[in-house]
Amino acid sequence: MAGRTYAENRPYLLPETLAELAGPVTGVIWLPLRLDWSARTEFHLNDPAERNVMYERVIREATRIDDLRSYLNEESPPSLDAAIPARSRAAKLGSSFP
Image 1 (cartoon, helix red, strand yellow):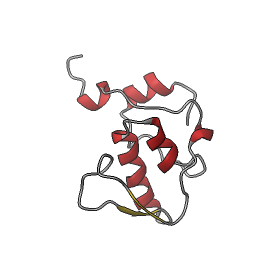
Image 2 (cartoon, one colour):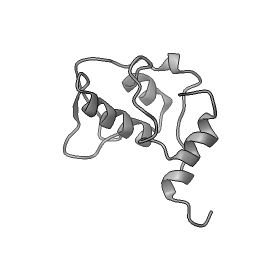
Image 3 (cartoon, rainbow, N blue to C red):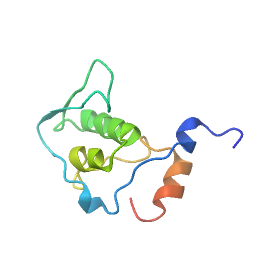
Image 4 (cartoon, one colour):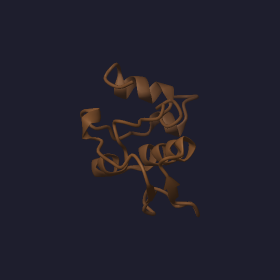
């Protein structure tokens, strides 16, 4: 494991299928403190940049599968490249997810 980062070694929650992700696709949401402890927890989902930041934070910080189901949506997934390190993504997701 020498040379690997914490992000590459930490476990990430994953749904069985993308269809489980039924969160909102428009509007404004506020993330709870357990998912985002920064000063800015309000995200406008109509803005792709804000949506991508929100998705990244949820993917990185979720400790319950319901967090993924509640905040993410299969219809508007960002690139997972930014949220999950490549080694972890390949090991966990394989060819199941984009």
